[in-house]
Image (cartoon, rainbow, N blue to C red; front, side, top):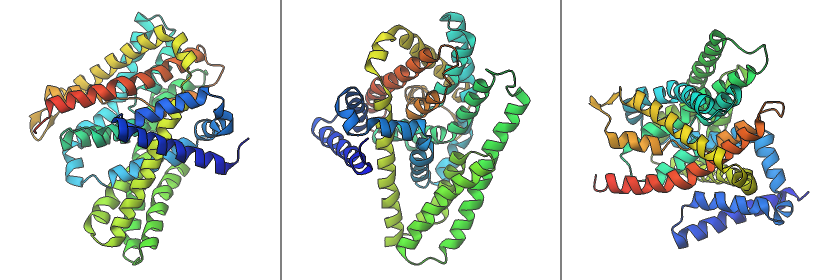
Amino acid sequence: MPSTEIVIVAFLGLALLASVISSKTRTPYTLLLVLLGMLLATSSASSILGVDLIYSQLVGGGLFVVLVLPPLLFETMMNIRVEAFTSVSRPALLLATLGVVVATLVGGVLLWRLAGIPIYPAFLFAALIAPTDVATVLEIFKRVGVPEKLATLLETEAVFNDATGILVFASILASFNSSGPSLAAASADFLLRFGGGLLVGLAVAMGASMLHRLVSERMSDLILTIATVYGSYAIAGAIGASGLIAVAVTGLYYGNTVISREVDVAAQFVKDFWKVLAYIANTLAFLVIGLSTNVGQLLGGLGAIAVAYVAVTAARYVSVQAILGLQSIGGEKFESSWRSVALLGGMRGALSVVLVASVPTTVPARELIVTMTLGVAFLSIVLQGPLLTRYASRVFRGR
């Protein structure tokens, strides 16, 4: 077993290698990370560099959601102005809640009735693949040129849909036993997770903004933000609420009431710190996708992956059209180009990989679920990312 120092150095070396290759070849940094992760996982160097340790701790040990996602959510939400959020909050939150449920139902029915997959594996897979992956979506929209409101819409959806996706997945997984929750119990649980996360995030952010008035030194200011982020996550989790929702609300409130109102060195120091931390978290997220992807398993399950990808895409299309087709922004209906970007931007990634790793070995067709999940996540990154970039540059050029 390699030492922790070797694992850290190996991780930083991979990140640097991907960054250099990306700058020289103009290949997306995140795509290179996925490919490097896949190569590393299948090479003899994997044992030397601690690949199994990274995977087991981040994915199997549950550290991914705790350590990787909060910096991504906080850094994104603290840079979104409340005016921009308010203008897209209704359709974004509908996509993040009702949209996930619709995608789960449509995807499950397609796989069950048309593809012939047994009902339980079909809906379990549809649930864990329904939420768009926050790391993937945030990275894409930082480098793709789309209107600011459209980027804010899909970023907000990705940030808030984790709670819905995790709840729907957990409810279907629990239904494997006869003691599974009823619809009423699942709905109440969702309200607690989502609403509780909102309240905890707001309370912690308000408290942090008051404490900020007592802080005058930049290191103390930074420590306050770290305690705010992980404190909101921990408190929400302790009461059964969504820690990710709490972190997102904390970022939005603290960013608009504290960080955006200051232009001094301390505020810039805090911004730069969270930008670096989010970059590291993003790098880890895409490495996890690569390390989780078994090339042999993908090649052996090409047919199932293709069917699953079509079903997932169709489910996303239905949810986007059903919600954005009936909603408006600024008093105007959503343009077809915006709905097309929402379809292409609905990428899957590390969150689905983490969820599928939690599926017990006793679940029927577990290997099929794992294969479809890894395959769809891989295809959504290597296909939809480049397609979205080309489409956006063509449609939104000059806007």
